[in-house]
Image 1: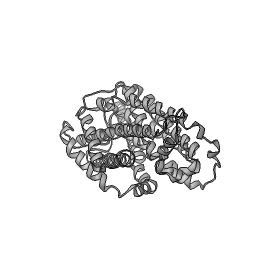
Image 2: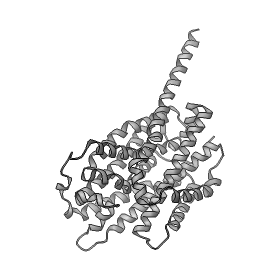
Image 3: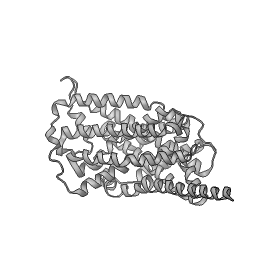
Image 4: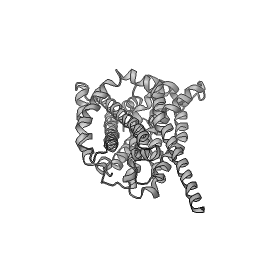
Length: 372
C-alpha cells in the first residue's frame, strides 16, 4: 500500500540528512562535559564507527527496493513479529520527535523569547510541522539545501568573528583522560545523532533512482553533516578550551564572544536563528516520518487525519519525558545511548542478517527444486 505519492531527488535526500545531522550541534553539550577539550577525538572515532552502520542501512534498503522500514520489518520477521518490531520503532520515532521539540522550546525560551511560555512556543512550532507534513515529503525536505547553505555561511562567519580568540593550546593536553571517557562519548555520538539517521529508511522508497545512487547520497549526507558538527566542536574548543564543560550551550557562548569588523557584536542572534531553523527542519522530518510509520503500521490510506491528534500527544509527551534540562542531559549521557542502540544498531543489523539468511535458504531450495 502506497501512502506517500510525492517523490524527492537524490540531492534533496542527501542534503536532508546533512541538515538533520547539523541541527544536532545543540546536543554537543551532552558529551563535552565528559571529555572537555578532547571531545573532538571520540567524535571523530564515532564518525568512523558509524560508516559501516550507514552502509548496513543502505544494504537493507537495497534488499527491499520500494519498501520503507515498516514494510521491511514485516517482510523479514513475518506479520506478527514484524508488527511488534514496527510498533517499537513507532515509539522510538515518537519519542525522538517529542524530545527534539522540547529541546527547541527550551532553547527558544532561554535565549530569545524569555517571557513566552514554553508551551506556546512548542505548540506553534509543532503546528508548522503539521502544516508541512500535510503536504508530504517533498514539502518537508524542499528547503534542505537552502538551510544547509545558510548554516555553512553562518558557520564561516562565526569562525571569522572569533578568529582573534582562537588558541591552539586549548586542544592540549591530549589523551589525558581515562579510556572509559572516550568510549562513553563515542557511544553517545554514535547514537545521538548519527544513529538517528535510521529514520531515513522510511523515505528511501520515495527517492528518485534510489537503488542506483542510495549508497553515494546516504554516505554523502552523513559525512557532510558530521563534518559540519566536527567543525563546530573544533571552533568551540579552540575558543573556550577546558571551560567548555561549564556551558550548557557552548556554541551560543562562542557566538556571544564574537565580534565582526570591530563593530558588529551580539552575534549570538545569528546562532539562535540558525539553530531554530535547523531544529525546525529536523522536527518536521521526525514528525512526518512518525506519521508515515503510524499510518503504515495501522494500514490506513493516509496519515493526514491523524496529524492533529498525534501532534497533541507529542506536546503532552514533550512535557512528561523529563523534568528539566539537567535531567535530560544526565539521561542522554547514561541511559539513552543504550536504548537507542537497540533501534539504531541491533535491530537494523539483525534485520539485515535475517534477510540474508532467508534469501540464502530460499535460493538453496530453488536450486534443489530445479535439480529435481
